[in-house]
Amino acid sequence: MFEQPLWHGFLEKLRTRSGAGYASLAFRPVDEERLVELYAGPPTPLHLDRLFNEKYVRDPLPYRRMREARVYTLDELLDPGDAVQQGYRAEFLEPLGITNMRSVRVTEPSGMDAWLSCAGGREVGSGVGAMLTALVPNLRIALRSFVAFEREKFRSSVNSEAFGRLNFGWLTLDAQCRIVDMTPHLEQLFQRSKLLRRGRYDRLTPASPAVDRELTALVKSFAADGEGRPRAINLSRDPLMDMLVRPFHDRSLSTQSVPVAIAYISGDRWSQADRCDQLVDLFGLSPSEARLAWAIAQGMSISEAAAELGLTVETARNYSKKIYAKTGARGQAELVRNILKSVLALA
Image 1 (cartoon, helix red, strand yellow):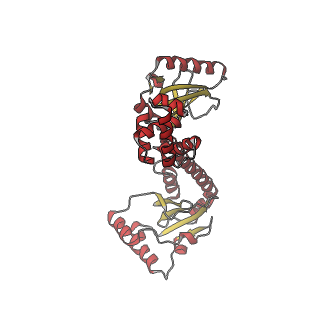
Image 2 (cartoon, rainbow, N blue to C red):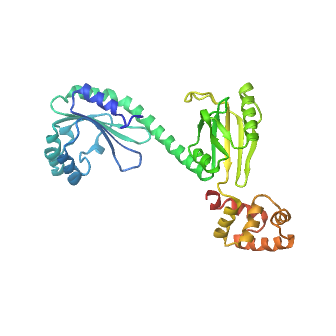
Image 3 (spheres, one colour):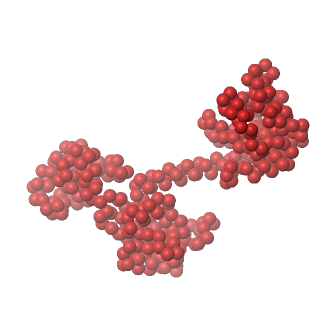
């Protein structure tokens, strides 16, 4: 299932062992109408390929009506009274040299259906049917693994996309601060922020020499005793970027280097000025109101924000009343919640 095309080696060996002209595996993912079709054998001639796409689109054999684990012959699958199926046999199968076939249906516990077939001439007999019967339990296990693998790939993709939108990610480091593994979008974060980069020999290299020394010493301490208190490191105030580094104890068999630390990196891809522009767009604030709203969202009080922005406390209070009205907030805590839970977090 890790091959491209999927299961090609298995199908080619099955074709050779059975003596059939073609070996195929078709499966329908759970709750989907599309059919994934894989096969080993000579390529279909262009004129037959064109005929199939124009006239049939998909195989008209009644695979859905097959009983699970029972081997069927071509004659059992073709209805003598069905003009489409008989035309398919005469116009497509026989020109391909397919006059005999053995096919078996396998159902995976989650609901995926699959059909394994060997097709060709006289050589596809009862011995091939016995081989397919023996393969059913093994194919069921392979399909179960495939479903689990695809499910984990989907979950990983969704999680990675969410991390990327929130500008959050993680990476693991070995004792020399070399990157062992990381979430995919962190490479883009490195290029965009310049606060961290992948240095020589894949070493994680902060732009600040002081942070570099602190990180190096911290990772060495984790490598020495395997324990230690997680430490938060600020990389930038504007735009905000922080890193939390802690010991890593999961010894995965999938990596060559041994990770000793994991770093969680969180940051804002936009500057304060960018965020204020977005608040203007989102809530209809004036630029001055947006600057005050963003300062409050960062945890400042009204008086602290006023001093930071060069406003009088009275002016800041007047602005805050307008901000509450425009954002629908009933107070400072709700304002912070409305801003941080808005689409601004995904921008």
